[in-house]
Image 1 (cartoon, rainbow, N blue to C red):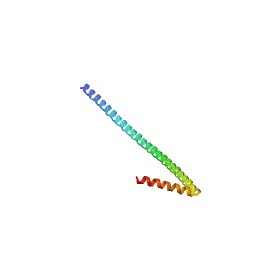
Image 2 (spheres, helix red, strand yellow):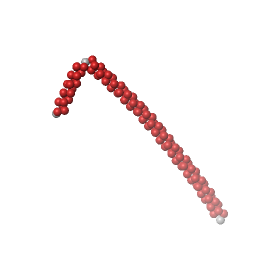
Image 3 (cartoon, helix red, strand yellow):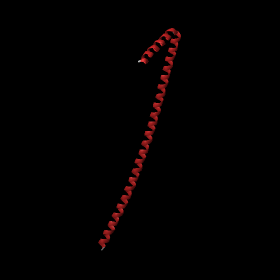
Image 4 (cartoon, rainbow, N blue to C red):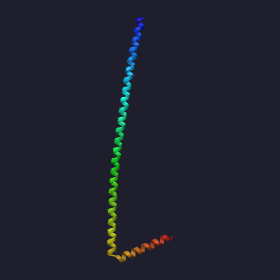
Length: 108
């Protein structure tokens, strides 16, 4: 009977040790899940910041291209205005010729 009591006591100690190990593993898994969640949140924030910065950069590039195009169009307008003022008869003849060609193309 003493051997049975010792066996039961040893089995109880092993069960208690297994329970303690299981509790420890559960805590470690919980900590690991929290760490993975934190890394995911950090990655999402980093990606959001990078996307926002890239969008801002593209917006600024678009505005710069638009401003450059507008300046170019204003330059062409000034050149055309100066050319018409210097040679009004020639400009009128060119405009009439272009209108005639467009009318011919519109008929077809």
